[in-house]
Amino acid sequence: MCGIIGYIGEKDTQQVLTTGLRKLEYRGYDSVGIAVFNGESVQVQKSKGRLEELQQKLDQTPLLGSIGIGHTRWATHGEPSNENSHPHTDANKEFAIVHNGIIENYLEIKRELIEEGYTFQSETDSEVISHLFSFFYNGDMVSTIQRVVKRLDGAYALGVVSEHEPDRLYAVREASPLIIGAGEGEALISSDIPAVLEHTRDIYILEDGEMAILTKEDVTLLETETGIELNRDLFRPDWDMEQAEKNGYDHFMLKEIHEQPTALQKTMAGRFNKDKVSVEFDELQWSDQQVKQWDKITIVACGTAYHAGLIGKHVIEELTRIPVDVEVASEFRYRRPIVNEKTLVIVVSQSGETADTLAALRQSKHLGAHVLAITNVVGSSIAREADEVILTMAGPEIAVASTKAYTTQVLTFYLLGIYLADRKQTISNDYHEQLLQSIAEIPNKIEEILTHSNSIRWYSESIKDANSVFFIGRGLDYPVSLEGSLKLKEISYIHSEAYAAGELKHGTLALIEEGTPIIALITQDEVSEKMLGNIKEVKARGAQVLGVAGEGKMDIWEYVDECCYIPNSLSILTPLLTVIPLQLISYYTSLALGNDVDKPRNLAKSVTVE
Ligand code: M6R
Image 1 (cartoon, rainbow, N blue to C red):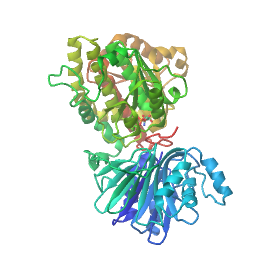
Image 2 (cartoon, rainbow, N blue to C red):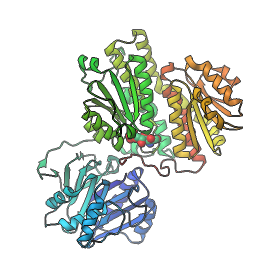
Image 3 (tube, rainbow, N blue to C red):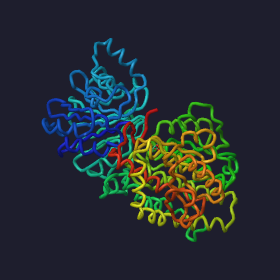
Image 4 (cartoon, rainbow, N blue to C red):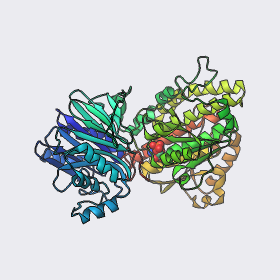
């Protein structure tokens, strides 16, 4: 995945591009570059590595001009290098392009262009696009773009500048996100909204099969294939830059962990009717007939969103008795899933752009299922293609490690479970009331855990040198263990595994030795005794156990070395609480190890390629 930015206007173009790229770094950060038209020719500067390295080059040789494009890359075709960085140009530098996505037929195009005498500087799929511009240019950029995109198979968001039209910036979208900012006397393109908010709040969200022509004065949207002009309402985000910046925290991840009480409050706002006796989803237009017809629910997602789905399964099955499958999207899409018009498919994705989840959504629709998306990004591909959308209200999540998006997804599953239970009348009024009451208390309980975050910090010091950390739990504590383990490995780079505690003795127990750190979640009352038995098993092999349990559970001191208490709540709701210390443990461990917390190695925020 990559981030693209483009600017036309009177400001310092180089600066607008580099500041925009800084905000897009979460999309990729192994190489970076910009191209600026200086009135005579297109000048390009690029660099392997982070933006700082490009900045050093630009400090020596600034690029001046009033139109330009920029790109921050996460390598897919060709290693991170100066040559493989974008922007790419044709041989005469008449055209410069930035690309996010994948050109699936680039080898075939490259072969044809080489036969025509074109030479290539990079190993990327994207470079074919700049040469195609040169090959097809006929004096008119719109028809040239139409001819270029006809040759491309795959996904692309493009920003294009040409010395033939130095007062126009072009943007094209097909299956990769792209937005347009229409400012006063200036206009921008970007892969994501935060990168343009400093300049304007007037946003157009480009759709697949559309292109835009940007001048200083105006923005024109066209259907790419026909050139027909389009009318599109402006989108004005109601969150501000401060929300997208660190706001005094050292890292986005820490800020986002602390934003969870507010994010959850926003996600539940307006969902309870005024007497808190029912949950409402105005966006769901489900007839009784439809609800009756669904004989199962299939949840599809990747990574952390998949872990939220595992909790969703437990909750929906418990409250409604409807069977629920949960599948990893990259597996689902390559088998013949049993999904049809009797299935409600729920795809979960923070970004709304994850390629495998999007493919699973399309496949499910093709098979006749009704698809509901739970996503955090308005106008994302998944939001647009699903039959219905529930938006989580987490606000922009910048850190690669997902925190507030996860808890808002989990909360959405609780609300959805109760909503379905209401429709199917599968829970008692008392339990219903108790659930809603307890859900409303969750944000304050998270606040309480966060005020004690320093008492969790010491634990990171004790695991930072471990070779391996194990997370164990039973019932709902197991999917939370999976999430805690993923969080730890992705930002601390310490090997970690999560186990359903009862499974340990079927193999993994062999790995437990003197001093092995184990984080044991003990919040599920029905299996609490069993869990204590499992802790005994690992203690007997010398493990060092940190227990995470509900306040007042004093008997566990007999079994664990240390304990982290969370406020009490209904057993079914504890996942929203237990995950908070686990997020903090991974954050502080990554910090103690001196890692780049927000941008872990080898990972990008949103995985828009397979
Ligand atoms: O944007 P999505 O929710 O579809 O992303 C799915 C995963 O890539 C994501 O949850 C990933 O596992 C997290 N960044 C891990 O913290």
